[in-house]
Amino acid sequence: MTRPLLSRRTLALLLAAGFAAGPALAQADRFPSRPIKVLIGFTAGGSTDVPFRVLAENASKILGQPVIIENKPGAGGVLPAQMMQNTPADGYTLAQIPLPVFRLPYTQKINWDPATDLQYVIGLAGYAFGLVVPADSPIKSMQDYIAYAKAHPGKLNYGTPGALTTLHLTMENIAMQAGVTLNHIPFKGNSESLQAVLGGHVMSVADTPGWAPYVEQGKLRLLSTWGDKRSAKFPNTPTLKESGINLVQTSPFGLAAPKGTDPKVVQALHDAFKKAMEMPNYKESLAKFDMDTYYMDSATYRQYALDTMKTEKAIIDKLGLGK
Image 1 (tube, helix red, strand yellow):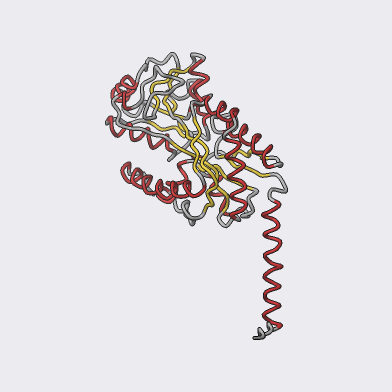
Image 2: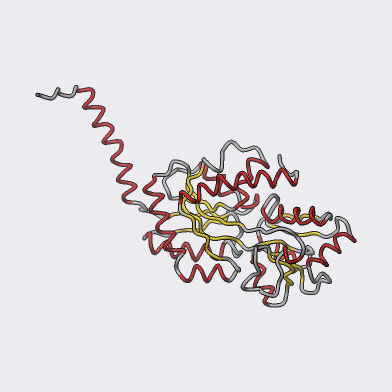
């Protein structure tokens, strides 16, 4: 039986579709053909920036193109995720996604959804947290900290990398549990907040372990760490739970691309950064800040985003800090 010939119109449509798909497929196959930018939401020189620069150098060697770190501090680290909403979905600009991104819909009016309007690439690592005071402070423990706050309502201040960050919310949760009032001082990043506490401008700082070198040098005193077990780097410091505060707080982060990025490009980025994060020098750079790798593939990371948005809403509602 003879097959019917295609009409000229059908043939033209098929050819047009082929030509349209061709350049896109070729572009994905050639990826990357120019430098890649990674936007991080915190200041240079801090516990986010330093390991990311090691990771970027590793990834550059694997991808065959420079991977450039750009600092976009402020707003609690969420600016890179917001910028993805107006960034071409070509894989050449990525954003660090810290935990505060997942509480954005509950704390401010936004026209995008963190769970569905980002293309999750890879989970990289997890922040450790702790509370520090100057080495000459009369506050020597979490018990002293709470006692001082009770004796001086609203006078005990603490710095964080910004309002509505995980650190801010955890400190307010601590205050709620202890029945005290603390005074929050937001900064743009931990390099700023640490200089403030070292200079005596704030009484304490809750942050990721950018404070670690200063604790080791005897310039700051670490009152507590916030994980489920004691820090390997500071084994003599009790956890919050050991200090009588029923809280455990960790904070994984990773990389995302703009929504609609070609799956082949996402896979190429995932594979390159997975190799980069497995290199010893990246793990060593994290260890300096008492951090460890926290790998999630793209699908697992997206599910983590969905789940985390539910838990963050519950925390925001509990503390009464919603929009």
